[in-house]
Length: 325
Image 1: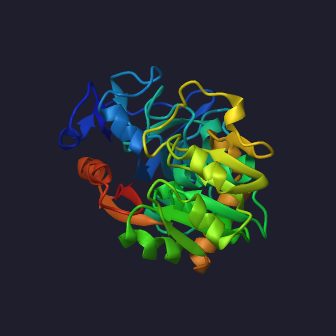
Image 2: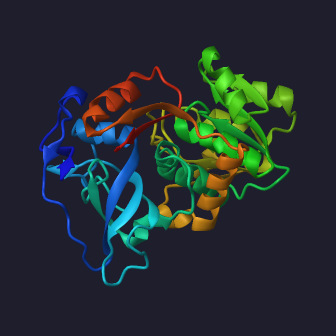
């Protein structure tokens, strides 16, 4: 089969398909024929050789994907030809991932799908939907009537979180540093879009004097204190991303958390996204009540380098998706 297999760090332009053995099903793992996959920042990091210790070369990249069961294992809960999504659980890092015609996928990393939507739309969803839903549900317990701030709203997870939060019945405030991206955040459902100069708490309190009930932090520790300031007493903040590069706080003290406010985090797996929710989202997309934020669709493994380069450029809004025709 053809795959993007790395033997060491390289440039995006060096991501070329090579011939590798097709995997075989085994206990706990099915072979999935890949139909589409999203391209992610973590894969750019892995390509550069800058990932954590669980990543080793040689490796086929790809932490997520969608496709159909090609060869089910004897203990598989799935049937040949069944549509599935896959994400996380070591894919593309500890084990080979989805940048390939076929992928050996742990059962724990798969979600059964019921949809006739095009593969480019379905392929954009797994990782950003899992992260968004996990953050809003497990991290924030978001409910209808809540007010929520999405800090980092023009990221793929941010855009998906805006759409999901509106679907759940929340009032959404979202941030972007770029005025040109305001229209995209509004189109996704944001009720208020704030231009982020690093200090947006005052803007939030101008709109909501008490502050927001919930906040999702996607920018990082560099803005965490300001985001906490935008949360009202007894409110909750979930730390999920570090788009600005900040993942740690030097000399952290619990007393840095304002009294009476709650700080949590989210870093989950496929199990945090129930099949029922994924398929409800697919139905909402088909009905036109939820939009999937796609930046560009690419065709074939030979286009992976272009997709990674475009993602790395930062000039696009939404998900970069590769479809294997």
